[in-house]
Length: 89
Image (cartoon, rainbow, N blue to C red):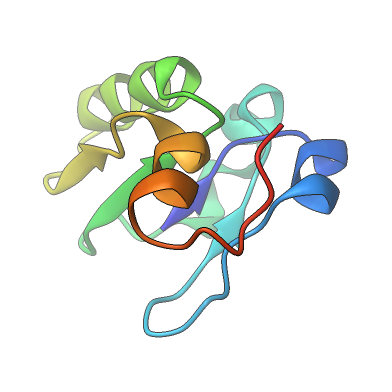
């Protein structure tokens, strides 16, 4: 999973990395840090509500990442639907 939110957002609400790997790269830093991601592995992109992560997912697909998904609704929806212990902001 690729969390593209800003560091202050991660402090407010974050996912536990289990049972998946979690990379936190703010959207504005993605181009500079793209080499940290493996284009052969699946990537699910996450932000607050899903708009930034959708842009990142489209960008990654254009960069040759074959298995990219956007987590619709972002961490807000994740908190409502899967883990109410995650703070909403």
